[in-house]
Length: 139
Image (cartoon, rainbow, N blue to C red):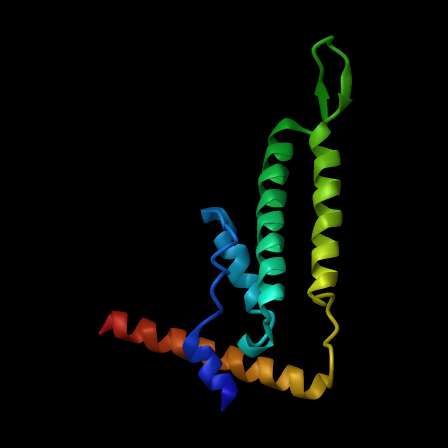
């Protein structure tokens, strides 16, 4: 029953003292869907926001690296490794540390059967809620 209530409430809001940029929002939404609503603590939400910012930064830096290439020419005309590679490595380490803090490494904490079941029910309820919303838009 709680999973249905959680799905109806939607994901938790970002704490008011934490700033999310517009581009962070899709990552925030994805991160919050990894757990049932009632599993999120206030501290976890702060770390989730930091993770969302980090993932958005990784996407931005990756796009820039794709356009610039792994090797660039410096002011003296010498080919050198693009500094974005090091930035991306730092961001990836930060992302992993934040995911470990949130215990999002793929293993469920506690009794896996109850956690997985609750998350599955809430996911199904969110999908059903989205289908209902889409049907209302078509009507």
